[in-house]
Length: 384
Image (cartoon, rainbow, N blue to C red; front, side):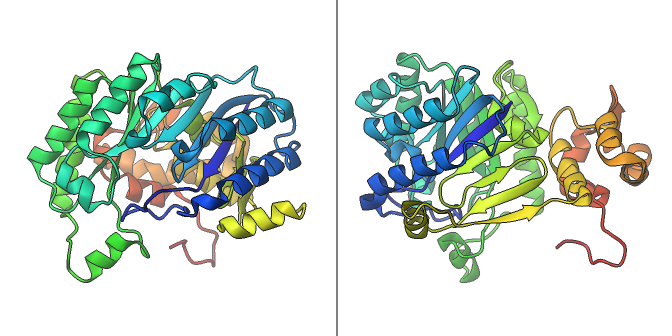
């Protein structure tokens, strides 16, 4: 099985914290969809005939596309790859795009999962982040999707925002629980270099929350959603039973996927490719029958490190049998040796059903644990 990720780079406005590739050049949308379909056709052999289980339209703002755009994209995917085995097709959307007419239109296409970037229900913070929607629009968008039969809705939240308080974060969590969505992705705010928010930080207009507050916010997140019946199946992801994100779970399990569109990444288990991060260059190259991209062949150490990094973020953890069969005794022994101090002394990890996994206490220091279990070749400096 395999997945397809499609990057839709268009945004009406740029959020101050976002460092994903996007553009406000809406006039290029038609040319982009044509180039995207050309890439989908050109790369039909990349997945080596694997059946497509998931399709994910991310961005950017995929809800900037219209019905004709979706028609061209799905027609191309169906003809080139087939959708008979597909179990999850996700559309990322901004709440204010999900009008009644737009949601009704979406029901005519094979989407069965909607992922909304809500981030917070605090009006002043939404304005500060340059989000286009209001709290009321977000709530109504979820209700509208429900009314039109969407029964797999995910929302994104951000915590640790400038001036974040326990009360404000708890209000966001309680509103989320009240909406009873199937899936929640919650991320701590990061100040990415080059973003407007990063520049505000550097000139002292905003301040990062302190570490103690970050830990408290994350504790509130886990406790509130656990009581509400959500499964904490990956460090930043929670779901109602049976509603894990199949597409993202495939990433964490090392399943191959094809990524199309500017800046999109692809993975075939042995190498990784990524397209040029320029809409204009992307369109120009595909129009000339070519493609601008870079490729990296992944050696065994790199693949080991990626497995450790992704698997330990999940509830199931890292399969020791898989580790041994895929990488042999040297890296398998290294991982077990490096895990011993955490297993014995700090109770930050445990082994269960042949898997090495983080305990609740270990989740709070997961970055350090994962870093320690990664392998660095002798005589080579560690990765930054």
